[in-house]
Length: 280
Image (cartoon, rainbow, N blue to C red; front, side):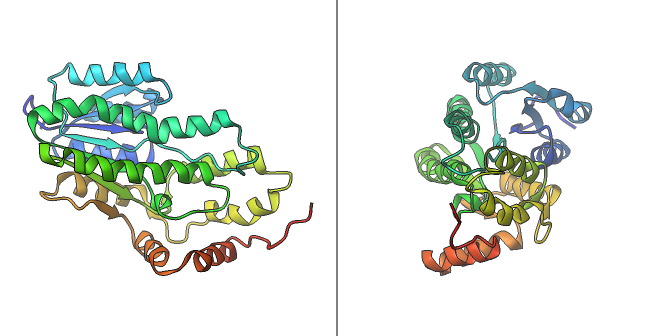
């Protein structure tokens, strides 16, 4: 049962998948949840459960400002911020329009940073709060045709490490969440984007091999299991700096740590059946 004294949580990207599951689980734990996404109609079920539903477009600073103002107007309190919103625009660097590259960074990096800036003063005044940035093992490894996606996730990793140490003296925790493959809309969106820009032409042979990464269900965890890991990180007394959310994530991160670049490159290229030479 929620009350005016209940802790307050923001969850971005709450219209589907991991974000929706996180919002639901936090409501069950008694949080007053502000669920945000572009598709407000897709969050009707969360509203029924008691969530405050907000429209949020992370590519528009004015939308972020309005959203934060709405949340803070209810009591100038945010206990947990789950920066979950994000997507993957895959395709060859040569072929992805720079407008799409900027949109990728706007959502995955700058939108995340903007919301974080706006809630930090209230956390700092209360000398408590927790910020969970959902990155990916893609913030530690690479995959074919994923340059801009990985650039965004590597950026969030470095951003979060710096932020964690800036705000620790004010009683604020910053936690990185690193899923591997998860059964959500994300793989389909990433593959569709890759096909739009690199489905034909010189890089098509690379996409042909890589597409199996997006369609395979091997090693995938459910969105609900990933959300459970996030909620544990949000509510545990002393969180770690990073949480890999599945056995597959732990294995892949271990291999990246263990193998030199040339060996890891070879492993990924073999998995994706990337040709050593492509005819021009």
